[in-house]
Length: 371
Image (cartoon, rainbow, N blue to C red; front, top):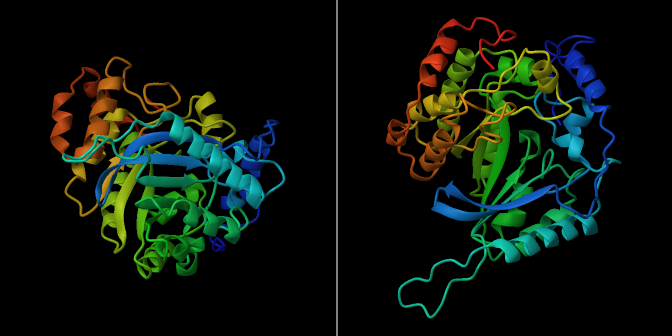
């Protein structure tokens, strides 16, 4: 794993201070987890370069992100849901996969049959998305044996997405999927194209240049990259967050091999620095109107741009006034599928004026103007 530069990693300063604070916060967690049960699994639809596909999303329970064990990202609480001990073995990981396939069989609706077919199509997702609390391609989290077995297990599907930090993206690892005939994408938690924001606000150690290298590695075996960006990390005002996100979407879309940009609005997760700030009145999750603004403004980029606001409408998730949250969320999901910014013309609310006032007048990250 690449190392932070001396400029951002000094004793008791910068990343070192972030990591010390977050290790203390996470030490308060005393929950334990079953290594044979996935963290989460659900069915949905996703926009891909080949159109909208039914998807099965799997979050495997592993020993946790290597960077998070050192302290990790200011907003990420996923390591708090990881199995203690630093690793989960091959057999247990494959049992988790089996449980996810059971969930799919029990919950998926049969696809509509094509004209002339004798019956409904097979009830299975075309797209498999596999995440961990860290990096699927880090062999401390997912052994090479397990990676190859998962590639074989899903060889009958159309496309697979696996999550990884850029330093673990290597062409030899991706061939476990591409050689099975799977369209393969790597989801990279880039968070922002601005190195200083990534280092100082998010506490992520790598630079944008390493993301570009990961895209080139993926392209070398005909795989693609899906960039995950974070809207409104701590220590930015609403306007700063919007401006950083617009520029980040455009910069990612200009990188060869990056065909999709997924904007993830920050939600307040447990055992994180963001949660500490939130309880002290120093952080408000982004407005749903901010998401609409970014999507509408970047719809002309040469990439699929999507967003899936987790916890929308709640105090700990992206929200507006409470009256319009569900309608705005529906418009965002509609945009994800159709990539048509005109969907946002269909939603209006008086709280848009409040959002405009916030973006114009908010001067400090630690003193949000509204809750």
